[in-house]
Image (cartoon, rainbow, N blue to C red; front, side, top):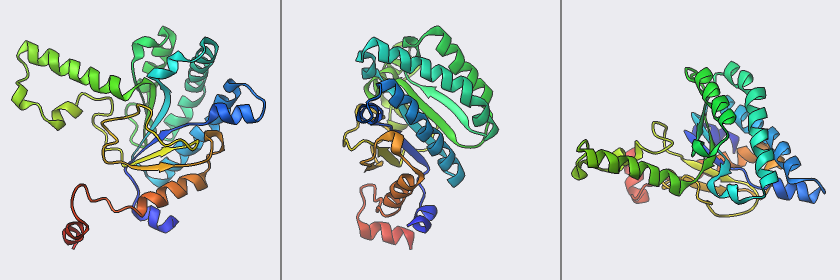
Length: 247
Protein backbone atom coordinates (compact mmCIF):
# COMPACT_ATOMS: atom_id res chain seq x y z
CA UNK A 1 0.00 0.00 0.00
CA UNK A 2 2.97 2.36 0.37
CA UNK A 3 3.19 3.05 -3.37
CA UNK A 4 -0.50 4.05 -3.49
CA UNK A 5 -0.07 6.31 -0.49
CA UNK A 6 2.91 8.07 -2.06
CA UNK A 7 0.92 9.03 -5.15
CA UNK A 8 -2.16 10.17 -3.18
CA UNK A 9 -0.76 11.96 -0.17
CA UNK A 10 -2.93 14.36 1.79
CA UNK A 11 -1.61 17.90 1.72
CA UNK A 12 -2.59 18.50 5.35
CA UNK A 13 -2.70 15.92 8.15
CA UNK A 14 -4.16 16.61 11.61
CA UNK A 15 -3.62 14.36 14.63
CA UNK A 16 -5.45 13.91 17.93
CA UNK A 17 -2.67 12.40 20.01
CA UNK A 18 -4.73 10.32 22.44
CA UNK A 19 -3.68 7.65 24.93
CA UNK A 20 -0.68 9.02 26.85
CA UNK A 21 -2.41 8.64 30.21
CA UNK A 22 -3.67 5.13 29.51
CA UNK A 23 -0.22 4.10 28.26
CA UNK A 24 1.31 5.27 31.54
CA UNK A 25 -1.40 3.69 33.71
CA UNK A 26 -0.84 0.30 32.06
CA UNK A 27 2.80 0.51 33.16
CA UNK A 28 2.15 1.79 36.67
CA UNK A 29 3.60 5.19 35.78
CA UNK A 30 2.34 8.74 36.21
CA UNK A 31 0.35 10.52 33.51
CA UNK A 32 3.29 12.92 33.16
CA UNK A 33 5.50 9.97 32.24
CA UNK A 34 3.00 9.08 29.53
CA UNK A 35 3.09 12.60 28.10
CA UNK A 36 6.90 12.48 28.04
CA UNK A 37 6.81 9.11 26.28
CA UNK A 38 4.49 10.61 23.67
CA UNK A 39 7.15 13.11 22.63
CA UNK A 40 9.03 10.45 20.68
CA UNK A 41 5.91 9.88 18.57
CA UNK A 42 5.67 13.65 18.01
CA UNK A 43 9.24 13.67 16.71
CA UNK A 44 8.52 10.64 14.55
CA UNK A 45 5.42 12.00 12.84
CA UNK A 46 7.07 15.37 12.19
CA UNK A 47 10.07 13.64 10.63
CA UNK A 48 7.96 11.21 8.59
CA UNK A 49 5.56 13.86 7.27
CA UNK A 50 8.50 16.07 6.37
CA UNK A 51 10.29 13.20 4.63
CA UNK A 52 7.19 12.27 2.63
CA UNK A 53 6.64 15.84 1.44
CA UNK A 54 3.35 16.42 3.26
CA UNK A 55 2.74 20.14 3.26
CA UNK A 56 1.14 20.72 6.68
CA UNK A 57 0.76 18.87 9.99
CA UNK A 58 -1.43 20.04 12.87
CA UNK A 59 -1.09 18.34 16.26
CA UNK A 60 -3.68 18.59 19.04
CA UNK A 61 -1.48 19.03 22.12
CA UNK A 62 -3.79 20.60 24.74
CA UNK A 63 -7.46 21.45 24.41
CA UNK A 64 -9.57 24.20 25.92
CA UNK A 65 -11.21 21.49 28.03
CA UNK A 66 -7.88 20.13 29.28
CA UNK A 67 -7.64 23.10 31.66
CA UNK A 68 -10.15 21.15 33.79
CA UNK A 69 -7.57 18.46 34.52
CA UNK A 70 -5.79 18.32 37.91
CA UNK A 71 -3.56 21.35 38.46
CA UNK A 72 -0.49 19.15 38.91
CA UNK A 73 -0.96 17.50 35.52
CA UNK A 74 -1.63 20.82 33.78
CA UNK A 75 1.49 22.33 35.36
CA UNK A 76 3.66 19.40 34.28
CA UNK A 77 2.27 19.59 30.75
CA UNK A 78 3.04 23.29 30.47
CA UNK A 79 6.58 22.65 31.74
CA UNK A 80 6.91 19.88 29.16
CA UNK A 81 5.82 22.22 26.35
CA UNK A 82 8.37 24.77 27.50
CA UNK A 83 11.17 22.20 27.66
CA UNK A 84 10.24 20.75 24.28
CA UNK A 85 10.33 24.16 22.62
CA UNK A 86 13.76 24.90 24.05
CA UNK A 87 15.12 21.46 23.16
CA UNK A 88 13.56 20.85 19.73
CA UNK A 89 13.36 24.20 17.98
CA UNK A 90 16.96 24.23 16.70
CA UNK A 91 16.51 20.80 15.09
CA UNK A 92 13.16 21.76 13.59
CA UNK A 93 14.73 24.89 12.16
CA UNK A 94 17.59 22.85 10.71
CA UNK A 95 14.99 20.68 8.95
CA UNK A 96 13.26 23.81 7.55
CA UNK A 97 10.07 23.19 9.56
CA UNK A 98 7.91 26.27 10.11
CA UNK A 99 6.38 26.22 13.60
CA UNK A 100 3.18 27.92 14.70
CA UNK A 101 1.12 27.53 17.86
CA UNK A 102 -2.66 28.00 17.53
CA UNK A 103 -5.06 28.54 20.41
CA UNK A 104 -6.00 30.96 23.17
CA UNK A 105 -2.57 32.20 24.21
CA UNK A 106 -3.83 34.54 26.90
CA UNK A 107 -4.46 31.47 29.04
CA UNK A 108 -0.76 30.53 28.91
CA UNK A 109 2.00 31.68 31.23
CA UNK A 110 3.84 34.78 30.02
CA UNK A 111 7.12 32.87 29.87
CA UNK A 112 5.59 30.22 27.61
CA UNK A 113 4.00 32.88 25.40
CA UNK A 114 7.42 34.48 24.95
CA UNK A 115 9.05 31.14 24.02
CA UNK A 116 6.30 30.45 21.51
CA UNK A 117 6.71 33.86 19.88
CA UNK A 118 10.47 33.35 19.66
CA UNK A 119 10.08 29.89 18.10
CA UNK A 120 7.62 31.19 15.53
CA UNK A 121 9.86 34.10 14.61
CA UNK A 122 12.92 31.84 14.38
CA UNK A 123 11.22 29.47 11.90
CA UNK A 124 8.91 31.88 10.08
CA UNK A 125 10.86 31.90 6.81
CA UNK A 126 11.29 28.13 6.60
CA UNK A 127 9.89 26.51 3.48
CA UNK A 128 9.47 22.93 4.65
CA UNK A 129 6.71 21.27 6.63
CA UNK A 130 4.22 23.70 8.14
CA UNK A 131 3.78 22.48 11.71
CA UNK A 132 0.90 23.77 13.83
CA UNK A 133 0.65 22.85 17.50
CA UNK A 134 -2.86 23.35 18.89
CA UNK A 135 -2.35 24.51 22.48
CA UNK A 136 -5.22 25.74 24.66
CA UNK A 137 -7.28 25.24 21.50
CA UNK A 138 -10.94 24.40 20.93
CA UNK A 139 -12.86 24.24 17.68
CA UNK A 140 -15.78 26.21 19.12
CA UNK A 141 -13.40 28.86 20.46
CA UNK A 142 -11.84 29.11 17.00
CA UNK A 143 -15.21 29.71 15.33
CA UNK A 144 -16.38 32.17 18.00
CA UNK A 145 -13.21 34.27 17.87
CA UNK A 146 -13.50 34.50 14.07
CA UNK A 147 -17.16 35.53 14.40
CA UNK A 148 -16.27 38.17 16.99
CA UNK A 149 -13.69 39.70 14.68
CA UNK A 150 -16.17 39.81 11.82
CA UNK A 151 -18.79 41.38 14.13
CA UNK A 152 -16.31 44.11 15.05
CA UNK A 153 -15.61 44.77 11.37
CA UNK A 154 -19.33 44.91 10.60
CA UNK A 155 -19.97 47.27 13.51
CA UNK A 156 -17.25 49.61 12.27
CA UNK A 157 -18.66 49.60 8.74
CA UNK A 158 -15.64 47.80 7.28
CA UNK A 159 -17.69 44.72 6.40
CA UNK A 160 -21.13 44.43 4.81
CA UNK A 161 -23.17 41.35 5.80
CA UNK A 162 -23.72 40.48 2.14
CA UNK A 163 -19.95 40.29 1.65
CA UNK A 164 -19.54 37.57 4.26
CA UNK A 165 -19.07 34.11 2.78
CA UNK A 166 -17.23 30.94 3.64
CA UNK A 167 -13.86 32.18 2.38
CA UNK A 168 -14.11 35.42 4.32
CA UNK A 169 -15.09 33.57 7.48
CA UNK A 170 -12.33 30.96 7.10
CA UNK A 171 -9.75 33.75 6.79
CA UNK A 172 -10.32 34.52 10.46
CA UNK A 173 -9.74 30.98 11.71
CA UNK A 174 -6.56 29.66 13.30
CA UNK A 175 -5.52 27.63 10.24
CA UNK A 176 -6.15 30.40 7.71
CA UNK A 177 -3.74 30.28 4.79
CA UNK A 178 -3.12 26.54 5.01
CA UNK A 179 -4.50 23.86 2.68
CA UNK A 180 -7.65 22.18 4.00
CA UNK A 181 -7.16 19.31 6.40
CA UNK A 182 -7.58 16.18 4.28
CA UNK A 183 -6.76 13.46 6.81
CA UNK A 184 -7.44 13.29 10.55
CA UNK A 185 -5.67 10.60 12.57
CA UNK A 186 -6.83 9.87 16.10
CA UNK A 187 -5.00 7.31 18.21
CA UNK A 188 -6.21 5.58 21.37
CA UNK A 189 -9.27 3.85 19.95
CA UNK A 190 -11.73 6.69 20.55
CA UNK A 191 -13.91 7.81 17.63
CA UNK A 192 -14.86 11.44 18.19
CA UNK A 193 -13.51 14.88 17.28
CA UNK A 194 -13.27 16.25 20.84
CA UNK A 195 -13.84 19.85 19.73
CA UNK A 196 -10.85 19.82 17.37
CA UNK A 197 -10.84 21.84 14.12
CA UNK A 198 -14.62 21.71 13.75
CA UNK A 199 -14.66 23.94 10.65
CA UNK A 200 -11.47 22.60 9.09
CA UNK A 201 -12.45 18.91 9.29
CA UNK A 202 -15.61 19.37 7.21
CA UNK A 203 -14.26 17.24 4.33
CA UNK A 204 -11.43 15.38 6.04
CA UNK A 205 -11.13 11.61 5.95
CA UNK A 206 -11.19 10.24 9.52
CA UNK A 207 -8.79 7.45 10.51
CA UNK A 208 -9.08 5.99 14.01
CA UNK A 209 -6.08 3.97 15.17
CA UNK A 210 -6.30 1.56 18.10
CA UNK A 211 -2.72 2.15 19.30
CA UNK A 212 -2.00 4.56 22.13
CA UNK A 213 -0.06 7.64 21.10
CA UNK A 214 3.34 6.67 22.64
CA UNK A 215 3.16 3.42 20.62
CA UNK A 216 2.49 5.19 17.29
CA UNK A 217 5.02 4.15 14.63
CA UNK A 218 5.88 4.88 11.02
CA UNK A 219 3.89 1.76 10.10
CA UNK A 220 0.81 3.27 11.76
CA UNK A 221 1.30 6.40 9.67
CA UNK A 222 1.67 4.24 6.55
CA UNK A 223 -1.63 2.57 7.42
CA UNK A 224 -3.37 5.93 7.79
CA UNK A 225 -1.95 7.20 4.51
CA UNK A 226 -2.97 4.01 2.73
CA UNK A 227 -6.48 4.45 4.14
CA UNK A 228 -6.54 7.99 2.71
CA UNK A 229 -5.22 6.83 -0.67
CA UNK A 230 -8.07 4.34 -0.91
CA UNK A 231 -10.83 6.86 -0.29
CA UNK A 232 -12.90 8.35 -3.11
CA UNK A 233 -13.20 12.05 -2.35
CA UNK A 234 -16.30 13.27 -4.19
CA UNK A 235 -17.15 16.55 -2.39
CA UNK A 236 -20.86 16.14 -3.02
CA UNK A 237 -20.54 14.82 -6.57
CA UNK A 238 -21.36 11.32 -7.76
CA UNK A 239 -18.64 8.81 -8.56
CA UNK A 240 -19.51 9.09 -12.24
CA UNK A 241 -19.10 12.87 -12.17
CA UNK A 242 -15.73 12.56 -10.47
CA UNK A 243 -14.55 9.99 -13.03
CA UNK A 244 -15.69 12.24 -15.91
CA UNK A 245 -13.86 15.22 -14.43
CA UNK A 246 -10.63 13.21 -14.25
CA UNK A 247 -10.98 11.90 -17.82
